[in-house]
Amino acid sequence: MPPSFLTQKGYQRLQEELDNLRKNKRQEVANRLREAMEGAGDMGVDPDAEYEAAKNEQAFVEGRIQELESLLANARVIREGEKHEVVGVGAKVTIQEDGNGPEEYTIVGPAEANPKEGLISNESPLGRALIDKRAGEIVKVEAPGGSFTVHILKVE
Image (cartoon, rainbow, N blue to C red; front, side, top):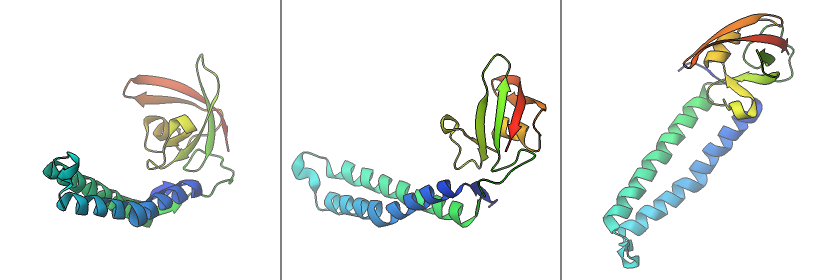
């Protein structure tokens, strides 16, 4: 598996999610399964449906645990606060699209991307277009909705 780029905050958030799934959610699902097997039908719930729903939830929880374990095992934590001359993972970049105000983003790995919080993936169309570019450059972005250009105002 290729490395996953995460900020320290993102790494900690995913580690906390993993810990919660291992310590709390697994036990909750196990209790739900046990209750379903004991015949929770007394409360007007179809025991077979409840058992099936609990098994589905268990599969989801275990799948998410495996996903997080793999992601964290291959994580490369981005050093924050370093100055960047070119756009790369961990860089903060201020861009401006024609007719719009400036926007600031931090380039992160896909596991942590959240454009509403100013975190864009290095694998997204905008992230890919910005990688290895410098302040002052005009970049054409090929996106599913069509292409557009952005001016890189600042890289830090």
